Image 1 (cartoon, rainbow over the protein chains, first blue to last red):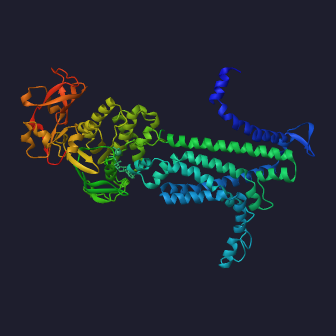
Image 2: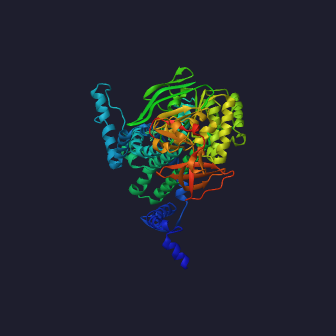
Image 3: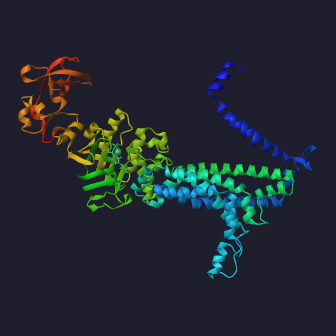
Length: 296
Length: 337
Ligand SMILES: Nc1ncnc2c1ncn2[C@@H]1O[C@H](COP(=O)(O)OP(=O)(O)OP(=O)(O)O)[C@@H](O)[C@H]1O
Ligand SMILES: [Mg+2]
């Protein structure tokens, strides 16, 4: 340990500024995750790690289990659909924000953020009240109006889970989109209109491609949240409903099969990373594609 | 070609354009010249349709376009910062307008090649705007507008980002291109030498008004207001009392309130009886000429540009005689200086 070392330390140069956060994450995130994932490769009986307990059994068993793939597909399609729904709802809202005056902007921002101030569980219970059986808000209204005779089954369906997730995660899509759209260079659109393009084609050929960084950020965050959420599927999907995240919860907390649960958690997290990477790469590709289009 | 009458524009309570009248003939190059913030960009954006005037009418080629959106006016616009599309190559930027007009692919290909050739950017066709120099970007912006053969080309300080040498070359180049293609152009600048180089006529603006609209020589030789005289060529503007000390000038002054004397019309040295005594307070070499500031006895400071040919430079603090070379070239103004 030389003088130069202490100089760098004192001046906060090199990697030192990252050390506190790294130490924190190492103790409270990386280490526990490592321990958890290692359970996926270990035989455990009655809470005791067995000697010479290393095994690939849980990995091979899980991957060859049809039920696993079925559950994975459910997670994937629920996550993807609610992410796309979020995007389709958020983009027009963020665009409206960017085109509005100060008051309207404030209103949109407050309405967007305020759901974050209540817990996701409370909001999910609110959906129970709205979607619930005969006495749920929607069904009872429709029956009162005489539009239907018997209540729709809305709760305990994929539909309920997707709606719930979309609502809970909407702010995370709106905020990055607002950031890029509000900061965009308006002269780009003026230039497009000035060259005779219509408003619609200006929107799709100029505004949307230039907001790509915000789109990628929003899709990434919301997909990661939706794909791994287990509270909403449990509450709005009902007893028989299951996703990968729900399975992890059940294996570890209910069935107490830690090894199986750890393996599922590892696969959930790993696949989530892969999908996020794919969104990022696809985003880059879309930019490149729109760029190369007429080069021919 | 362009006929703007009584254009007024407010941004909130800010009265940015005040009764602007601007008539531009077909094929003419007109420059809007004025200090920063005087409303040049706003007037240009009104002509393009990016802003709607709060009062006044705008006619392009005989058609009233006051309320027409920009994509229905036949106008090309080169932005102050070019506004090239960063996600499109040079080629795509130039092709954009033709594509919007749904031109056939082979026509687009041909015309894009021609347009890039016109601005000598053929080798840069596949590059992206952020990998181009300021001058190259400026030419892309120009090609992108010219390819649509607009009736009117509007350019907002298109040469700002260029170094002095390239700027001069591009100004000459632009004038050639515009004259060759034969379009009508309105340019904005706050650089008077640029205005003198490229324009058939110059509109000098101040605080949202058009102060004077005339040919460059006319603006330079016969400014109609102190502002114009000062803005173009930084003329000396003497009050009636100060001007009266110069015996020759009294005739030109003829009872008016102020007298405009160009710095190159001020003569230093000479004999006491045809001038006024003064003291050099500042001296500077400007290349072919020496520039002096000379204080007269009453405190009035005159700027003088003296040809260096056969001139013995004066030092700061030296006493000298100030005279007017050609009294007829002075301009009398009725308003106060
Ligand atoms: N969108 C706007 N909203 C409010 N005020 C504006 C807007 N655009 C311009 N202004 C104001 O209008 C006045 C004229 O602006 P303009 O851009 O026309 O000036 P300019 O002559 O082009 O100046 P410069 O030479 O600096 O480009 C300025 O006082 C400016 O602050
Ligand atoms: Mg401007």
